[in-house]
Image (cartoon, rainbow, N blue to C red):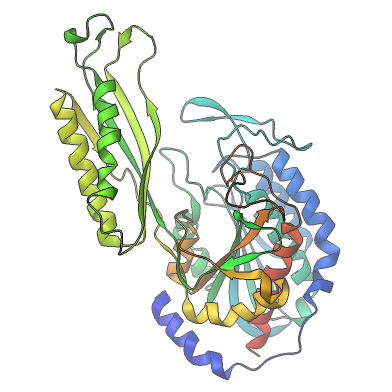
Amino acid sequence: MNAKTAGALLALVLPCAASAAPVDVDAWAKPVDAKVLQWRRDFHQFPELGNREFRTSKIVAAHLRSLGLEVTTGVAHTGVTAVLKGGKPGPRIALRADMDALPVTENSGLPFQSKQVSEFRGEKVGVMHACGHDSHTAILMGVAEAMAKHRAELSGDVLFVFQPAEEGPPDGETGGASQMLAEGIFKTFKPEAVFGLHVFSTLNAGQVGYRSGPLMAASDRFNIVIKGRQTHGSRPWGGIDPIVAAAEVVTSAQTVVSRRQNLTKQPIVLSFGAIKGGIRYNIIPDSVELIGTIRSFDNDMRDQAFKDLENVAQHVAAAHGATAISQIPDKVGNPVTVNNPALTAQVLPSLRKAAGADNVVEMTLTTGAEDFAYYANEVPGFFYFVGATPKGQDPNTAPSNHSPQFFLDESALPLGTRTLLQVAVDYLNKAE
C-alpha cells in the first residue's frame, strides 16, 4: 500500500475513531525535562558529522536499552532503532529524530560551544550542531523514556528512529533516511503513520509551525567542473582561463530561475555554495569546480532547471574556449516533504493542546529540505517546526539554521517533548 492509498484509508477511519481517557502529557514530560536539557548540551558540545555519529548513537542505544526496549544498532551505518510495545493493542507509529551535525565552526559563545574538528571533502573543518539535530535527538530520547514509563497506558506500538546523515552522507557513501528504509526498518515494523519535528530559527520560542500538504522543498545537489588550460598569470593568452568562465557561468545561471521558470506556479531556488580553483596568485589554474543546490516543489520545474543549468554551463564554457563537465544533479536528491492532509487534520488539535492554540501557526512553503520526505512517501507523515529564536528577537533577522551563530532558546526542548508526546499518545489512544 502506498502513502496516498494509506492516507485515503486514514481519512475514512478518522470520523469513527473513539477517544480514550485523556493523558496528562505535562506530567509525563516533567520528569525527563532536566535529562533532555543535559543530553542536548552534551551532544552540542561533542557533535559528529553524518555517518560518523559513533559517540551519539552509543549514548542513544544505551539509553533505549535501559528503558527495556528492543534496540537495533548499526542501521545505515550509525543509526539506531527501538521498538516499544504498548500495554494494549492498537496502531503502529514511528517517531524520528536526526543525529548528525554540520561542517561549521561554531561562533555562538555558549559555555558548551563545540570545539570539535573533523574532515569534510578533504579539508579540516569545525563541527557544529548548527541545525539543531542535537535537540531533536535529546527530545526523542525524552519522549521514549516518558512513553516507556507509561507503556501500560498506551494502545499500540512505537518505532523510535534515530537517523544518521540527514544532511547527506559523505561523498561516495550512502546514508540517511533512504538508506534506513533500504535496510528494511519499515519492513520489520510497518507503521501506519510517521512523525517528526525540527527546531527552526524563523519562529520564536513558544511557537509551533505546521502546513498541510507540501511543506519543504525537494533538494538536489549539482557539480560543474570548468576545464581550461593552465598558464602564468602574466600571460593569460597562453592558456584558457577557467576562473573567468566559471564566474560567467555563476552569473548566467541566475537566469535559469529568473527568466526560464514560471514563478507564479511554484517557487524554485538555484544557489551556488562553493567555488574552488587555483592555489597561487600568479597561476591561472587548469580547472575550477562549482557546487550548489536546486530547491523545488514541482517535478517539471525541477527537470527544466537541470536542463537549463546544463545548457548554461556547456555553452558559456565553450564561449571561453573551455569545457564543462557537469553532474546535474550529481546524485539522487531529497523529494518534497509532504504532510498528509488527513493526518495533519487529525493531529492539529494535539499540537494546539500541547502548545496553546494561539502559538500554533500555519507556515508558508519552506525552501529548506528534509529527508524525512522518504518516510512520508512510504506511509502518511506529519512534520512540524518548533520555534528556536528567543521571544522578543526578530526571527527574520536571527542567525538561521546552518549559521555559526545559530542559537537555540532552550525552552524549545520542553515544548518539543510535549508536542511530540501529545501527538503520539493521542494518535495511539484515540484509535481504541
